[in-house]
View: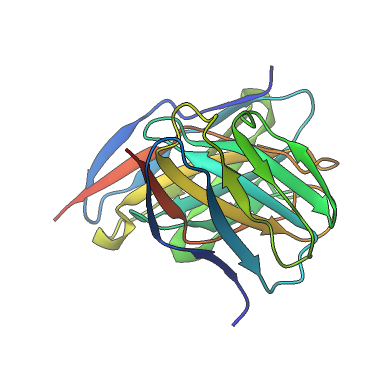
Length: 113
Length: 113
């Protein structure tokens, strides 16, 4: 079955520390991959996406993610976290030829001052 | 500015009543989606529409209905048959076929008592 796993429900980091949020997927073929961020009570905003090519992709707000086919992973990273990064982060996959997306259950990030 | 609007932001209904959530986009996108979000469960797809006058059930369509009479609009009706309707509802849209970036509205929080 197709699925997306975000193993960390909550993560707490200090401001200025590095961050890595994990995402693993189970899919028949290499899907399109996305990371979204959601502030409380708001919609989702796209941080970055991977369709093909370079496996390290840069996104907005200083985020990057690396696609590792052998590990079926698409982990999100940021070298130095800011207090404004506190939010919930969702990994998602989609097949290039369909309209359906599969979202992970999300990782809630807390940033300590 | 182009985007997706959802109204109202908060909605309260009595059990047994049908309620319709509004979603409008001016991005000229072909595809539109409705998701339900519950704490710890990520986003679950209710319905999606690839083109006007056509829509497909998602993973949790029971107790919901939609229409797509105009490209810009994709209203969702939560019927009295939905056993647990209290949730945060997100509308999204995307351009073209397959797996492009999804743009999300700000969401509607429905509370049924």
